[in-house]
Image (cartoon, rainbow, N blue to C red; front, side, top):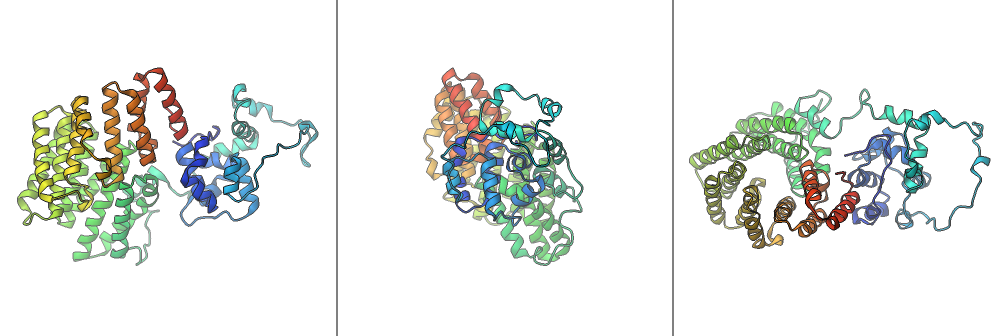
Length: 489
């Protein structure tokens, strides 16, 4: 989560070594640099602005797609100095290193041309309750706290408040899009409502979600939801049904993202919109696909019995009403059975969970391999992944590990599925008391899908559970790891 305006940015040294950061610095892509600071150091736009001597509005413009670009050397220098970039990072940015220490200067001898020496707003500085130990610590902390003195504190506090006409971001943008907020999607252009463009955008959102690039999806999806709403009200006949199908898929992604972020209320709205659009599309496989996210929302809210019933009812419906057992049908049908099996496992209904797993396995064999039809990632391997998860839900850590041993990580085609499997394996190892191995698997999961670890409250709770039960040596490593990735336990 982004820090408060009065908090310093704590940047892990490892962030400057990340390939994404090295690439961004080499391209002088400050937009990506700021996004990486937000993702891995939890820095808010206001904090970045304070450190770099920029207004929060300018930081916001810089971080937007197609927004303000930094091109002047003076600003690059100011950003590098403000973030206390190490020499390697400065050189990647095309700046000279600072290997030589600055000459010693008597600070009291230097005064501003416009401000007499000694006029320090001591009352305001004191109100920050700065820990004297922090003042003696990291240089970036000292620099940030010094910059918070005086007018900077005042402007930083006000900058964190919403302003009239300010662009909505993150979860707030989702809330606005789902409520039909008039500031989003007004006066759409014909290009925005093009079915080709909308189809491509929905496919991109789905693919990006499955690649665990959640921040990218969050930035683009609210506007896409608004465009699809306009398309559904503008197009007619087959084009309208196509738009409704795309809207169902896009709202499915929105609900999935919101569930990962712990935003259950908004997730329910998105899931319901997905189902409404699916029914309007008159496509049974789309209806079955949207039933999956309804089932997920029910499970997440603790309604495991209702979730099981919903999944099985819709699976039976499409099995009865679909004329041909196409790959898309088999994938949606099998994915619904798996979702019902998970819900049954969460309510400790072993018999129903085993029955649904076996039925899903039969559908996977009939499908003949691991595919991603209708964005389900369904196939025999996905059935095995769910066997691991359900054994874990039933408290059978040993069975979960045994199932996990038989799965080739490289055979899992999607990043999101691989990351989920690794997290389930780590949970099982924690249950089994193998804390060192659980920690090692978590590290692998973070290397594979950083945002799956850093952005999800449920994973943060998992990290806290591991911290609570691990021996001191693992606790120390875990504490270093969470600090490195910007997660506060």
